[in-house]
Image (cartoon, rainbow, N blue to C red; front, side, top):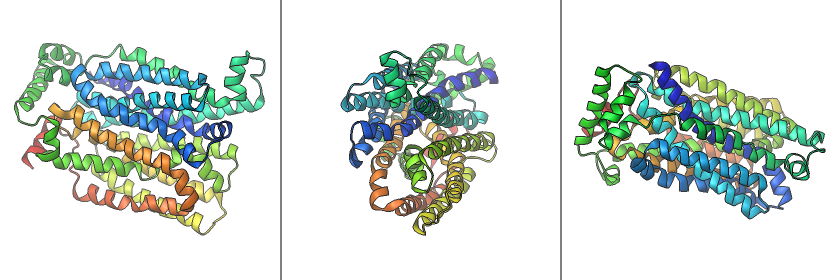
Length: 457
């Protein structure tokens, strides 16, 4: 039973791997694309954030379509978008075409970023839901790490000139314009994701919501006994009889606080500065005294730490709960950001010290905001409007990410690195308040119990 559910969760979590890969692979291409297309600061930001605009588009329709046609079917659409984007970027003939294909990839990211954790939450038992949904964030960090390794490998291949004897097209992609190979490498995991999605069943909760309880029961019987399966379906049917549906409910009814909390934490998680490090890490580390090759190597170390500390969350999220991980994580993020800003402000010429506090920041994010946010967004909304509500909250994630992706070059140039990191630190103050004072603990509760909490509150 357990292994079967875990297998399904791992397949769905591949959407997170592609999310992380797509997000991080661009970091190794920025310098090359900027030089080749002679981009200014704002256009450099547009190259990075264009995919993020796509994610907002993807999220905007993912919830409605997944409520209508099912989580599985729309995830398959996202896999197709990933593959099309990777191939298109590798072959694009102009900056406009490159941005267009990045937008397409962003749509895939937006859809997967909402539906992968949602699907996992709907197949997972309450006692292990946090751990299984956190697999999604682990997959994101692994995608980021693999992307860093891919960038380093392809860069070394390009510099060595070992691909000089390839055909003219391959030589252009792999050697002379290596950024094409970096972006095109996403084709492999995209096609794997597409194939594996064909093997997973539809969400039993979605099927029950659509009145297909017998089909839902037959799927649940693969993971659990008949009595437990009947109880799961009965719980969903009971919730459906209550007046908790409609997106308007989330803006004015008992779920208003849940919506505001989810959206606020979603935006604040991104303005912590995590994507400034993911996207512009090499540039930031270069300003701290590292050479480009060393900076790209530093990105790999960042990726390793990101993965390792996500395992910590995976291990403890269902034991300690969501709140303790967020409380200590947000505190650590604030302290790290303030310290990094101080190192730049006082011009401390110590690249190792800078790297230590960047890694501390990454570690704190990786065991808190990184995995816990996706777990919360997948479990705090009621069934009838879960797709639509999670679309809104996930869109908030991408609005924050787009803002950071677009504005970080401007921040670094005008506020300087110290002002940029101190600005991110200031954004963690309201995050800490919400976690301590407003956020309920949801560990061990069924999705239906969490829904009833908001109704009674």
